[in-house]
Length: 89
Image 1 (cartoon, one colour):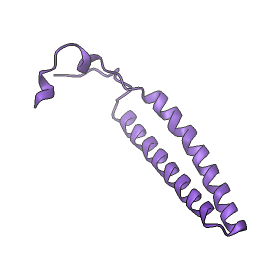
Image 2 (image 1 turned 120 degrees about the vertical axis):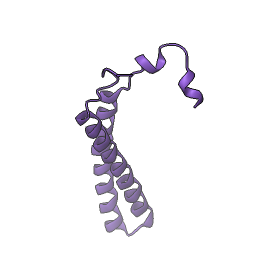
Image 3 (image 1 turned 30 degrees about the horizontal axis):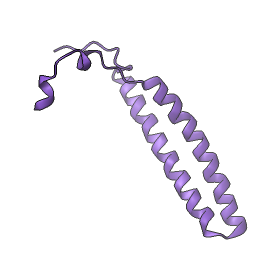
């Protein structure tokens, strides 16, 4: 594969900002859940379809954020912590 012949230290020293990603996903999860609830209440009170769509979009964002947090938890359980793990090659 063409990526195996890379020169430099990028593959060895590359770091993933997992802590920042975890913080952002947590914040987005909370905001999206609150937004989904607010939009669902507005949809029930007004009967307007637009609020139902907004609630669905916010719920989808919340699901994506929750899945990202699960992936991050899985990576942490495997010992990955933002590129600080030793690689045996």
